[in-house]
Amino acid sequence: MEGVILDKLQRPLKDLRLSVTDRCNFRCRYCMPEEIFGPNYPFLSSDKIMSFDEMERLTRIFVSLGVSKIRITGGEPLLRKNLPELIYRLNSIDGVEDIAITTNGSLLKKFAPLLFDAGLRRITVSLDSLDDERFNQLNGNKSKVARVLEGIQVASDAGLKVKVNMVVQKGKNDQDIVPMARYFKENKHTLRFIEYMDVGNSNGWRMAEVITKQDILNRIGAVMPLEPVEPNYIGEVATRYRYVDSDQEIGIISSVTDSFCSTCSRARVSAEGKLYTCLFASKGYDLRDLLRSEESDVVIKNKITDIWNHRKDRYSDERAKGSNRGNSSKVEMSHIGG
Image 1 (cartoon, rainbow, N blue to C red):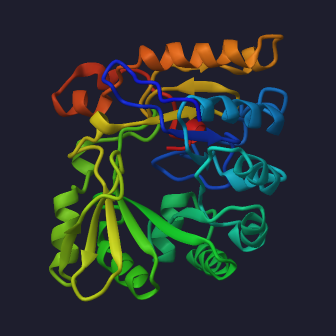
Image 2: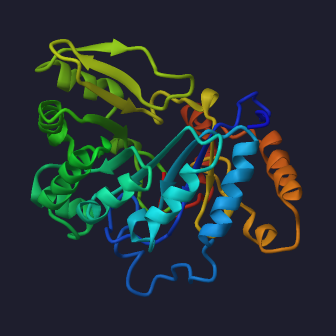
């Protein structure tokens, strides 16, 4: 790793979120609602999506600029053919200290052992309810809870450290906050609650549907008292809490009510090779054409450096101040993996 680059707000580039596909086998309401992402939706053709060679090359360039953590996202990343091969290749890059995957868990039973053998050690599973009826309503009737829980168990048995993400929406699944907390406390997996965010343009987000971090803490703390835990590192997105009667933790990702823009060190690259400097960005910068040209790694590295040096995104801060930027068109979360 040659050195760290800084943006306009003096935030370093440390994390790369790399999408390997824009497709998903779920149709979650807050991400890929069925009426928009239906059978005729124009997903990327295979020639538009970066190859593993291109992803490996691009990751090496990002690592040379200070990146040490990689998260593989989608869409649903386990839909990408031969994904364990990519994990092995990225994990072999000198300077990559941590690599993880975010998945809906539906294919984990099949792939978890292969991913572990490829060098993966951490995985995050999205699960928004333990109630089958609500879970089906939320995911477009694409999976049962048992299938995801079985995948989590297989992943854990294979040696993967598992975290679970729950997006909380008022009137949709907020009644599951305490049952989810209790279940994953007993099963010894860290559960992270995520405030419902206005990502993309398709989910019909309204502030009235947000369950705040404080509300989540109040509900859990009333039955299972919590105490705050110091962050693991600067820029950690989840605020951590520990149950006072155990060493089990929860986390809360509160982008809506408690912005963490000031410490954001994440770059996102979509499956077709566009670099986005914010989860709520309205445009991306094409790196795929550079990768497929005769340009050298140095040219691509300089391009990324220039983009990051000019970065000044602070969407959540601006939303909190009532900025009307929230009305602008934003990249869909399914395209860059959240």
